[in-house]
Image (cartoon, rainbow, N blue to C red; front, side, top):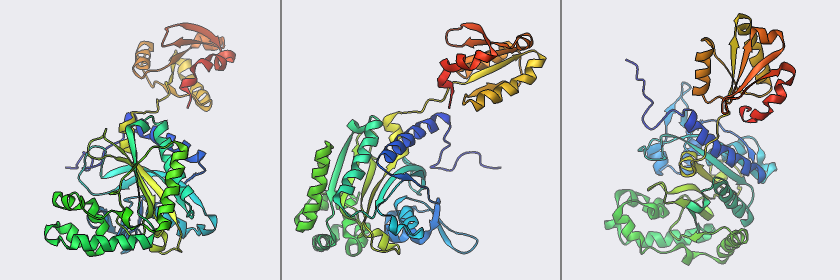
Length: 418
């Protein structure tokens, strides 16, 4: 017997849920456009190495969470687990090096095999903002401020706190990496199995460990700020000064890191305590080494991703559906004419419902049930006189309107247009 339930960790986006997600995307798209970002879309699957090289072979996403399969041509293919690597691949593939700074906005589904929980599914959706080819700290400020403005227009900025840190330049990062290896190496017997595996290859990721024993060690671990050279300090200072100028509040979080070596300088998250343990609703950072990592020329970049499900839950916003206009034919001739009227009104941009059967009473009951704004009753006699009856379903008022005046009469129902 065929399974008729959605796969675990996925769900159907019915009209009300979809309206909430669409509202988030619409706000994000509008803000992105006002900041000069252009919307793009990449395929939902890529060659596996795009993500394996960008996210690190030992990362949890690559080793445990990616949906990877071999296609009929023998190629290893992965469903997109995040947008940044895909957009960077598109930047390289389409020869956009001469178009920097390349500013892109995207929204779409992502796929990760992990334990489903509130606001996190195996198929989930993200908005994404990227600037490629801009090494200046002003790009960091713009990216962060665009995220803040999206949260502001969703009326949830006050529910979040911007956590920010610097990962320094490669020189600073190498010095800090050495300090971490020395510190954690002296406590090998207390590290979790995962952190032992990361110690030599990716020690910064130990700072993100959820293991209680690891977290106890992290408390006394060296701080990145103690290993920043002057250039890194100046860069971070310029980013903070830019945020101050815009009145964007923040908390410096010295434990906020990104484990992969291509991340540099700014790392940030907008965090909320209104969604339980999964607190970040927008997270990003500067990735000056990523494009080179996946086969392109050395090119700086910075961006962020935001969870659409989480933002919809946090904001409670929704795009209201237009209230339809219902056509109610009364008589045999009107039945044939109704479809022509529906076509005419739809071409004017109105949402029109045309019942396929039933008497006037049944069709009017259905009009109430679907929340129609008004009903146009088309009677054989009235059509001969080039008039219709227009009934407001909120007030109950009904009046006769000439066909010539109908469009003007419907100006009161702009909420029925798309």
